[in-house]
Image 1 (cartoon, rainbow, N blue to C red):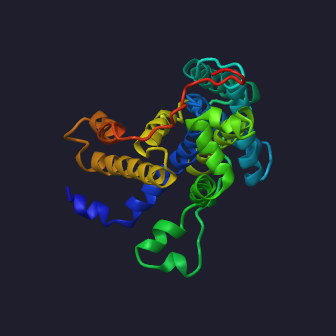
Image 2 (tube, one colour):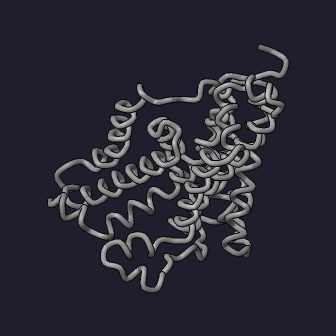
Image 3 (cartoon, rainbow, N blue to C red):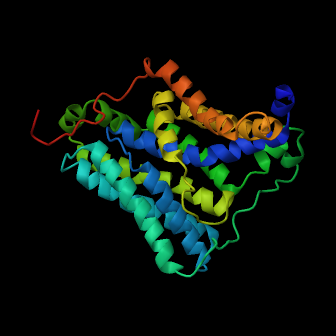
Length: 313
C-alpha cells in the first residue's frame, strides 16, 4: 500500500473536494448562527430537509437551480422556527435544535413516502454535472481537481468568500459578531438584537440546507433514508475546530473530506485484512483528535447559548 501514491493522485483530491462540499455549506451556516450567539443543532435535520426539497422539486420538473432555491427555502423555514423558539422566547437552544432535527428529518421522510408511496428504489434525477472549463481544466494536476467540480462546489467556495467578507469587512459583520459577544452593547447602539439573530439563523439554516441539496443534486442524484449520515454533527465540530473563522472552517471541511477519501482508498487496498468498520470510523476519530487539540484555545462567542431579553440585564 503506497500512501504517497494516493496523495499524488488527482482523483484523490477531486474526491476530497467533492466530499467536503456539503460540509462547507453546513459549517458556514453553523458559523453564522453561532457568531450571532445561537447554537443550531437542527443542522442534521435541515440537511435532510434540504436534500428532500431540492430533489423533489427537480423530480417534479423544476430546473436544477430552482431546486437549489427550494432547498434554501426549506432550510429558511426550519431556521425561522428555531429562531422563534430561541431568540424572543429564549428556550433552550439545545432542546430546540434537537427538536428541529427530529421534525425536519421526519418531515422529509414523510414527504418522500407521501409523494412516492409505491416506489421501492429511489428515483434518479438529472443532477449537476462536473464543469469542463476550457484551458483551466487542462492544467496538469490542479486543473482536474479544481475545474472539473460541479457548480455547487464552486457555489460553496463563493459562500466562504462572502461569509468572510461580510464578517470581517462590513458593518453588518461587526454588528453580527458583537451580538454574539455582547448583545447589551448592540442594543445600546440602537440596533435590534432580535433582528440580527433572526437573520443569522435563517440565512445560516438556508446554507445548511444547500449542503443537503448537494447530496441529492450533485453527489448521489437521488434521495434515500440515512443519506446525511452524521454530516451535520461533523459541521458543529468543525466550527469549534475553526474557532468560528471562515478560512479555518474551509480548511477543516477539506481536511475531513481528505480523511474520508483516504479511508475509501485504504479500505480498497487492505479491506481483506482489516475490518471495513475500522476504515469507516477513521475520519471521525481523526476529527475528534484534531478537535481536542484546538478546542481549548478556541475563541468562542461569549454570548453563545445565552438567551437575551430586551430590558433585562
